[in-house]
Image (cartoon, rainbow, N blue to C red; front, side, top):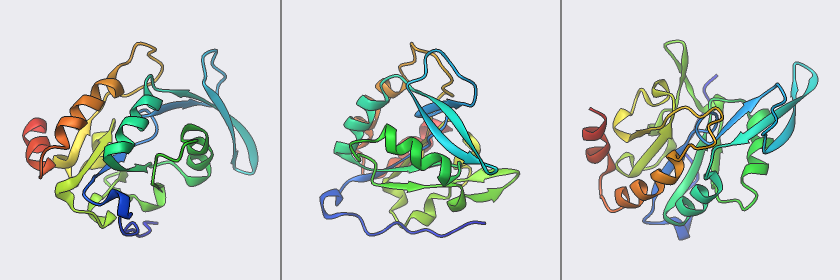
Length: 186
């Protein structure tokens, strides 16, 4: 089930940047199979042989967040979702191609009844790798690389991504992010 990883070598323009790994669902967006009055866009996904409409609500400030972090970080979306759902969603969410890489469920490690995003398999220096995820199980193997974020469903007053921009700007000044995040998370 678990596919392999190692991302391609870092692009020349990204050398010296840290790698920022972002979760998708309930971190950047919330998706629903039921119509909602306030969705931002819809995608159609094949599920069990049938086309299904998915209503997607973007977390407030997600566009601004992606713009800001793409200037300072190598940005990777790592989702426990299937590619056939995540790709069409990301194609709409990231029209400016600010996200360099996409990883899906097949790159996760099944552990303890869930999916774990093993950052050691990215082929990046863990001292310079950060994961932002609403599910602590996802970063079970590297908790000292994690910035926990609240689960997003539909709170229009949510400011977590906006607040995270400044925190990440500050974190970028540290040589080893695990010392900062490890002490913060313990």
